[in-house]
Length: 421
Length: 129
Figure (cartoon, rainbow over the protein chains, first blue to last red):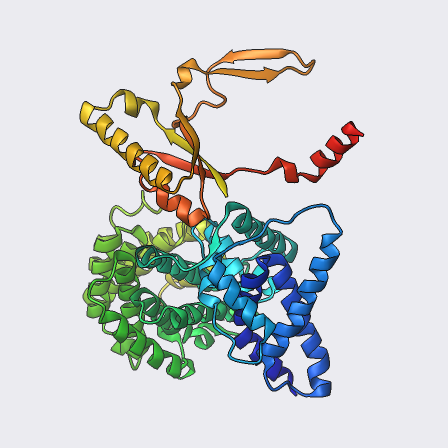
């Protein structure tokens, strides 16, 4: 047996088995530890004895024994541990499976996902907990994803589990009206995990971008458990279309990895299978005619990503359509960042002066970041206003905290200050 | 589970409310009260008078009692009342709370069971021994 088999079982079965243990024993901490132990035992014994015929049943039985052992040990202690709220029928069903796990292991992951992605948790805690409990991502990897230490992340996950139990958050599927809202929470929890991988850290760390794919996996599981939900389809489409460019985004040939901007990327290195999947999900999501504002926002973002993904080369990009999508997105969100992106698209379509006009009035709304002055500098340079462009680059450099982006800005500024040959 | 629902609101809002606004708020409390009573789950609840009537008691380092005029903390919104409700879980509790006036900010806190506090139990047993 290769490590791949166990890894595959981990990816496919962790959440299903954990959900059953939680439903039966109503203890998040015990269930998680016991299942981690069961996987450790599998890593030891499967290579020697062969992979069992029914891996999830094997894991369930092994983990169950660990839980029972721990519960016996705990019974000696005085203190009664608080239990998770679980509906009686869910608990009974889990009990039947645990007594005889030979048959089909029912999928209780939806309840587990809705528990972890509960609006009573802070978004980042919900995101970390969902990665840990639903997907089985290691605490160490989650810590790297969210740019924190493993002990800090472990403490955060423990606090989140405790809050769910103490506050009485149930392992349950709410009625349809509430469920519609909860789908939005699930989507934002997955998106947070995805974007954390792309957040600027101390440098473009390729490992963290790999971890962003766990956000995609979470969205994929969510869509599998909540099929046909337009918001999840739009979200997964957006993630896939953006993530498909990951290998072309970073140039690792130099001494330091540097970000490669979209027009300069080698498009043969994009993941075209992911682009195809993203496009078909986008088409499916667009069929839902009464989608809410957040879904429409995701659809427009995905449509913009799709324009880039389907352009044969940078010069073939349909900037008119991208500018139109940004205009609708700005009307929907009123966001200054969207306005900034719209200005870039309009400049590509109509010329730098039209883009510069759209930047008017943004300074008060975006007083801190470097992107506004950097964008203005690039547009001023293209419209031939060299002195103003250099000044804008200086301001951008002042505000930029990321080393690889600073290098890029300095390079652009120095090209302008150099006397013409 | 037992939950305390702590009601926060800018006191001026009530003071400045029109007769219709007040009656709409009474209506909302009535709807909440009925829904909770239907479940036979209302354990208690009161409206509080304004923070102008509050007296805060603290101890000085020597253990003496120090009284000050006013609430524990001066905030934009003040604790204006509470309910004590029995509910099977937080989702049920938040569903019930959605019936209360929209102008409120509600803090939902599970009630702690001090009888399960190990240290307290041990101390209590020691005291009785």
